Length: 225
Image (cartoon, rainbow, N blue to C red; front, side, top):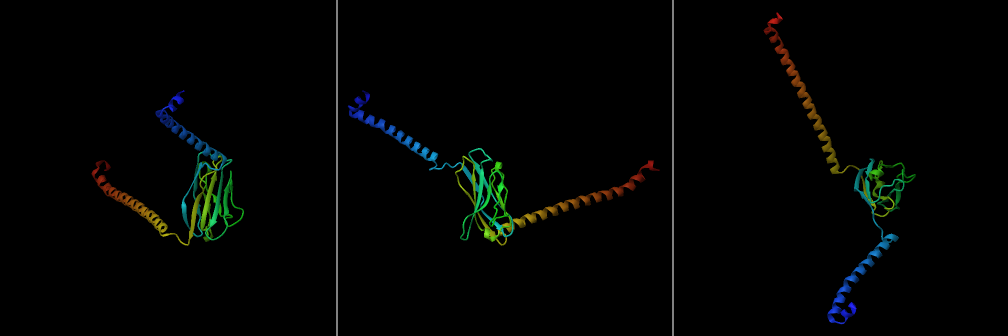
């Protein structure tokens, strides 16, 4: 009766239109929400719960060891029995992507390939660290290393990448940092040496003064005769 009365007048038709507009908008939003929820549940729309972080770019001198840092954050509790870490390598020159390292409850170094006996585990799963160390890097290691971490149900997320550049000598910035560190250490040793020498000189002078005053005290003390 109420809707019939509203429809019978021009004012009623306008009010009914204003009532139907918010209702249709709510229905539309609900439909979109259900659609996205269904896509996420089916895996068509992945839900990213894993975040992987790397240093981005790393430079290493030929023949030295380099640590490829990879840390992660998961919205689910860390489960060592199901968590996996996969490292892969994509060279600069044309070539296929190859496995570098795999971790599942324990480290699994590559049994063959260019990284055989070269890649070692340097991470801590409970500390959310999935880093590795590549020993005695070569120029053929120039390329991109990818770190992927899965902690079910967090199996979707970004893949961390580290671009490694192997050089003949250290870069100018690294040389400057090394020179400053060495110079600072030498200066600290010099300062400590100066302090030690000053203390020894002061003690020696005090001892000489005490020895000079001792005969005077003996002459002035009548009890010594």
